[in-house]
Length: 467
View (tube, rainbow, N blue to C red):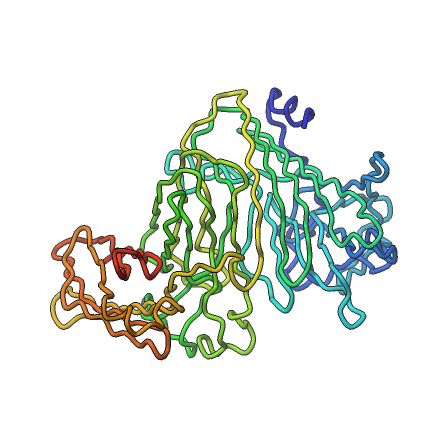
């Protein structure tokens, strides 16, 4: 912590660009074939419930990350040795050349004799994690600066060093400490990774401003949304949908539950949801059946949801959602994060603690009915649009309650008409249909929920329609 604080008082010095010719231009498949030998994994064979694979530099992972192990209060640097790697079809580097590391891969308890991969920390301050039986999808960052900022573009912080604390025997968790550096700031990211049926990462970010900061991203996450029932953009594809996250869920400081379906817009869209002391937010995958995608290779229904739960008060700020136009499913075109309202002056410090849940569903299942599907299509005339929103949950299973159920729907700007509520209490679901007349507008903000007895029966559905 003291080192990061002192480093922030010095001018920024970028890391050396010392990767030998050819390593930065490695093809993806060749780089993916470079793996550390299993007997060189940190903590291998020590019955600590966690093992660590050092990751080689190359491909797009060109910045060196110094790896260190903490044991009994002492720090030992992990020394690069090409003999500990299997390079596949790529010739190994010459003897005496230190290519260093680009990050780490974390394995949890073994399944059928094989280590189970649970997380990767690699590239900038990016990391990914999965729960049991899942495949990688949404990606997190320890810190983001100037995201979606038109004044000078995004600034990408990176990990200079990672310290890995040796777990106790049978501990099954691992503590990581990362030193973050960038033009405008330094920081320390502390993470406790807990593999299991759900992978939990307890996080604390302490930030030191090297320059004035007014666009900081905390709890940052990104995922892919190409097309689905509410946004096809004339996709010529054999699959009915392609996305690894279906929406942004928020539980606001006033306990309001909000669901914002994602879209692949034709122009960059930034949505700002002002709040104070949020209870949680995350990019979720709610489509958990293979029939949604009919993709036997990508299996988007197995991608993790990521839920961030603040620890302590975060004060005033906003959950910010960035939707970037994309025509390829390899692009993480959806970004969500908390943006504090208060700017940071030069020399200022700030700390944020939060817990991440990488799982199938958020840990706190609301009693309200949730949105299970959003569909939209051409209306009967002119620029009118039709919408279908499906809700599902125990709150909709009482036939008596559905008699008193009423929709609350607004458009700003624009006008809503032909609003219908179709309850199906035997299925604990309800469908709401309506038409939007945007007039001459090119963007409308829509809001919908169902109430009963003056109380919400469903989460609040928000949607941004754009021409």
